[in-house]
Amino acid sequence: SPADETEARERHARHYAAMLLERQAALMGPDVTAARDELRGELDNLREAVEWIVVEDAESTSLAALEAFYTFLWMHSWFEGAETLERLARTAGFDSDDPGSASAVALAAAACRIAIGARLGHDPAAEELALRCVPVLRARNLERELARCLCALGIMAGYRDALPEALAFLEEATEIAKAIGDRLTESGALMDLGFGRLLVDDLAGAREAFEASHVLSEKLGNPLLRAYTTSKLGLLADAEERYGDALRLHKDANELFASVGDPGGTGYALSR
Image (cartoon, rainbow, N blue to C red; front, side, top):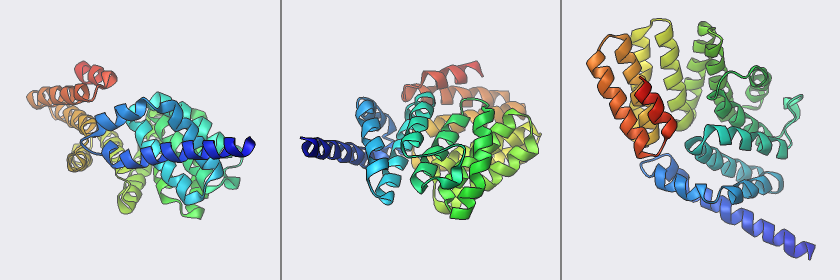
């Protein structure tokens, strides 16, 4: 019956949402590989569950499930994450022509999509959307989503070589993410901030940001984040003409990427 079908969908959604939430801490820590690989085997079920949750459940429950799903997608695949989150934002009712009309859940899904998509390359439409979302997020005091959109704007301004603009966005994103305890956004924003400072020959500023990101990744113990931050320290060593240190750091990053089964990361580290 329709009632039985509805009940079965709800049980399914709550089961898989609980699976995400139970593994969220592991995704940010030393056990990311095991948690990520377990969840990869349930990706279709996870998508279906979170789609149901963001439409049918309470705002607080929806935001918690979405945040756990975003953490998984960040560790799993930025490409697949961007596609999945774009569909999820639409499912939650996000209208890109009118961000101000969106619910907090729809805005959160859109901000996650903008944030993860920015790491794939410059997307002028996404950049424009982020600019339109920022005043809405400020007005509603949605700080986590604001930090993610600002970080994305910083990354995309960097793609356009608008470096002062990029640095301003990334500095604010870092400050907000640190204040609210969003360690994933903070770590990424610090890496991007360091790279932006490197491009304007601010080696001391780049070191400060890269080392802060590295300390955070070491504290979390997440080998994927450690791989990214180690590779950034390798770029700094290159810029400072410490070529022996650079080679060691890139090798260390390669080993970390390999340890979590990230072929893209190992290819990048080897290319350095």
